[in-house]
Length: 199
Image (cartoon, rainbow, N blue to C red; front, side):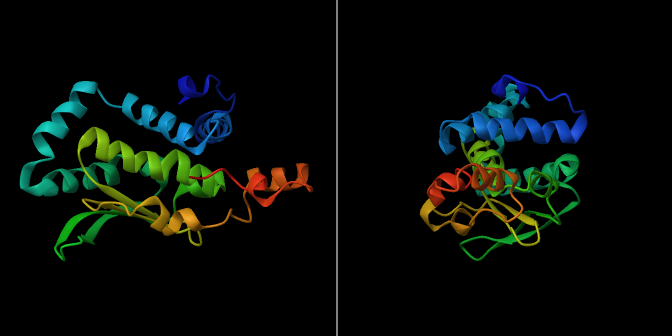
């Protein structure tokens, strides 16, 4: 992420990560540019051949069920440092079948520490959904809850169109430091200029 932003925080650990994520959000000229940068960050975490092989060999098995279930388990095991406690659960697919391909994040540390809906949407939700679909061949629909900071990952489920995704219709969080700073700087600005950039 530091490479994408072109800047590194002096703070160690998670606090530094949050500063860099915030800088990534500010650096982007648009929400799409921020999303694309975050996808590149996710790509950089994997050996390129692994992504190609996963998409070509594992994703087609059993209509994607094996790949979706494997990703749910890998996510629950490897991402608790980023998101906090989480567990694998079942999700209902559009065809009514149920797969053990969900991950429930009890209280997302990334969202809680960033205090920013825009950072959640543009550096996590949308890029993660795009990354798994485009680079691993698995649909993913993420459902963040901005009231209790939980999040439901639904591997094997296509996200709705952007204009129908309820998470993208939410207003900035009251505690959002970016929105608060914009309000303080621009009392005469329009509401769109004062909120976090979204889709």
